[in-house]
Length: 401
Image 1 (spheres, rainbow, N blue to C red):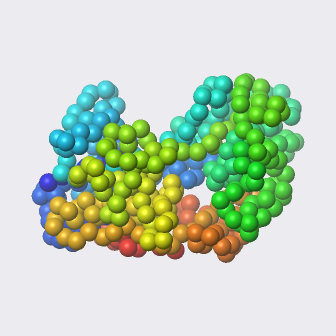
Image 2: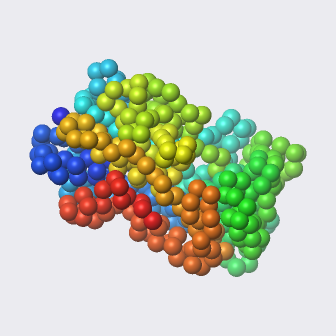
Image 3: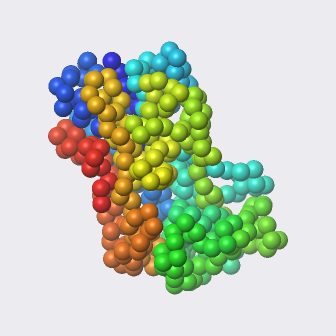
């Protein structure tokens, strides 16, 4: 028997850990239930931190962790899934192709930044969506020191006022001063089509965000979007021209393209609609987790969000349930009743909320300390020790705060 997990992000990592945990708990040998994880590299990219400086450091190796729990790593990228024959076609880095059969599949291929066909976006827009994107932005920011001083050089326009856009924008003043020196006059402008900043945060949390933006001297352009980017600035839908040397796109996510190869209903973000056990109802033997799946979090109509907080727990339940089906043990319905938000606000601290109504619990330096612990400890892989790694994968405890 074989479980194949596609993706080494938060959902894929925890799917592997949880499946291996249940396998060991039932006394099944790895040769009798093989678990294979497919990804281009055996590493976890710490995607929630890619708005920070030095993004090349924001990865964590997974090879030793997988080896410690007897999960096979398969280097490559899945390009097709045949649900009928239960096989995945994998392309290795050199272009060679192989087919890997499965008895159960966990789709944990994550999401990609939505890049609409705005003139100049592909050529002139940076992002922090993936590791390569974040590294390219960091190199560009450092190259600004070779340009003549001026307002446009010191201006960054961030397009998209969601969590990623806010964290990226509030980090920019400090990053620019570090690169350009104290004589620089950073100007950061946050653009969003919504009439208010952070519209989903609720009034109390939004006031904290607005105060942080004001403290940092950030400007906003709300109720408008970007209609064109070029090498000297951004043009907005109201006709305003924003001269800048740096434009960063943070306009939202969509499920990775491989998700479309799985039969089933999808939401407007491209995520597969799955049941409470995270099965894809129209694809027997297939589970989905993380940004690839739209799942109910509770019995009150709340749905999982595209966040590592949901991905880790969904991955653990998907991996557990995939193994449970093969081992003939009861499944565990996914649930996520606890939900917190910890939003980095750069030199203005951070914001910590609890609950789906986002009740503010901490702000400023206190919240910043919690954010730092989340970013540097909680979201990293467990130690590459068998007992510790398997203990971290209990679906009922993952990400409980």
